[in-house]
Length: 130
Figure 1 (cartoon, rainbow, N blue to C red):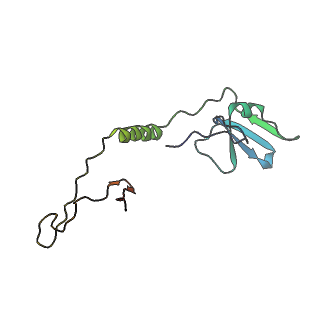
Figure 2: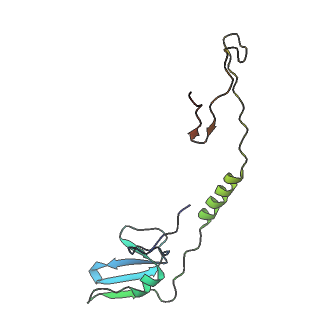
Figure 3: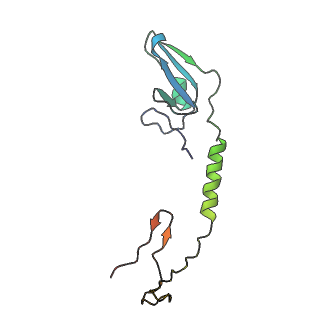
């Protein structure tokens, strides 16, 4: 799930609601609704910074009319959130001790405890060393 995009202005931690793009050839700054994805040559702005943007003398600002609103969660984001909640609610499977056998085929005949280090996802629990 993607995180909420923040305003690009230094020190601002507000959520982004608008995207600023420059058209250098036309000496124009365009402030519009938040783009669906972050682009390298555009800037995400919170509502306060989107409304107060100023440009150099001789430049023009084209600003979205109306209020900016935060983006609605997408179906992918909601599905990912539901999967994360489902995964967190699943009970831990009980570990089955692994039986060790020697060539005779008898479980535990080699004098082992029959336990194996636990494993969870990409992490392993290693037995302690004395």
